[in-house]
Image (cartoon, rainbow, N blue to C red; front, side, top):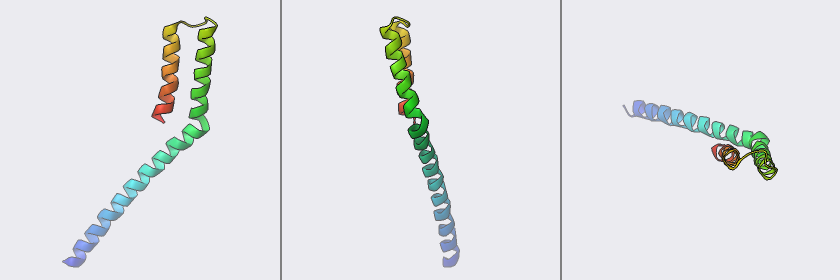
Length: 77
């Protein structure tokens, strides 16, 4: 009986380990995306919003929307 409990516990631990490893892999992928693409995209969007607003190409609402998009890229990754 003790052997069966030990095997059951080992399976639970193995399953928990696999789930945790999967989450780590997902988070590493998010970090990789942000470092390779997301950060640059957010920066470009912010710079374009500033430039367009200063030059009068967009109104304040559009400016805020672009800045919010930029921040969402940063926060969601």
